[in-house]
Image 1 (cartoon, helix red, strand yellow):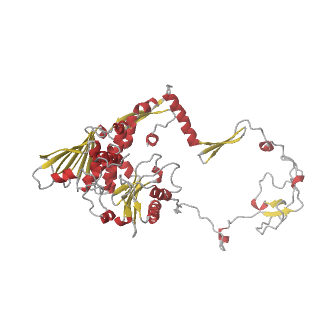
Image 2 (cartoon, rainbow, N blue to C red):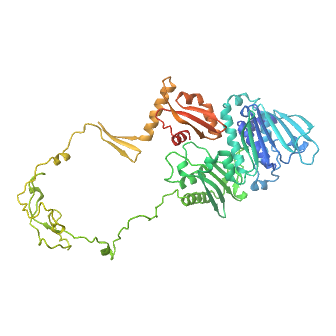
Image 3 (cartoon, one colour):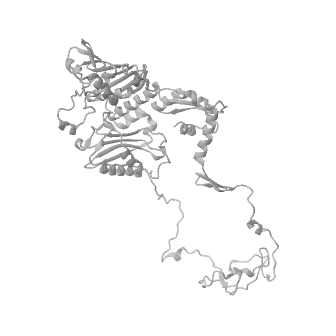
Length: 555
């Protein structure tokens, strides 16, 4: 077969496969362009979670008619001009592929006007082809409308997920961009309903609160470090608030979100022995480095970043998080509060002053004593005469003798009971008792059960010992119950005394909405409330129904 150059529209469709993977990808690219344009207010409007319409409106610098047409060409960008500029990138975009890729798989309309221009322009593209350009009246800034995404790529459109799943991905990308620029106002709408309305925030902490809720802010502590290689600031979650599901883990470098399993390991190492097994803490970590020391031109999505001194950054990040956790008393600590504590004597040359002021018994050993000559328990008690005069008491040293020697002790200095004073106990035989039976070996009629650290149960079985993980056993019991309920079996719902409101966040709320019928079939009586909250009226049998237990189960 002959080698040929592909037409530009086909080349753009191929490139779009990496740049525009779903509606969230288009939202991300358009929001980043708006930030680079200097916008202070950005609005994202969706229809059917972006499947039908994605509209991004900003009040940035806008474009001239010629620039508006040129921006849809491949590798057309205003961010770089020379190869050296790649080493000094401080903007989101620089590749010039996003708009060309979007126009290759959707119908795109751009309305834009610069400050100072009397009129703006409207440009239309479809299938990488320029359809029209006309003058219109429009506000300063840019307004991108992306309709019918993947209309000309049936396979890609067919494999798009449900509206709730796609909306979760959009919210995820929206959150990442909004976190990088607290000073910018953002708004996100879907099907005419507001999801997020974010005013410009005073600080990152306020932006986190507006995006993810006050409960998340109350569960994080600040971190800060500055070296010649990297400057780090942000927040990390409390160890006791770590969750089993991944979420709210963010790395940013020079204002750009990126993923890094390597740096994630540094954070997790700092939490050693603090986290429940299988959980991950939240973190919002911002790094500032010299642009020349990183490479962001790794992948078209620009979520991978290479660091020149990644091992140094790793150590700084680890130490930074570790210090913050220790400073906030989440690491192992010792209670130094000695108030109301008894004074404990210390062995030293002044130990005599701590010796109790009491009489000591006279103690001696009989080296001829043989313990095997004693009668059985409950038998005759032998008599040994006192070793000293009964009116004397001494705390003298104990003579060295074999441990097996029998003790002769005179306690006369401590007083005697009147009923026994002056009696000779020689030949006295105590009554028989049954105390010895307590120590007789008996056959085990039931398995012995031992609780170890409130985590494991150890019991005996015919073959030996059986160790049971309590937490996993409980999960298995619930799993079997839920499986029977889904198979048509009956389920029991425990009604809470009062309805419990639980703030689960926007993304988790969408998960609840998507699986609401299944949850009700399992015995969860849940109703949506607001944009990021659910109301729990009942829980399946076996769950606690108090406020804290319900919140923990819904987390």
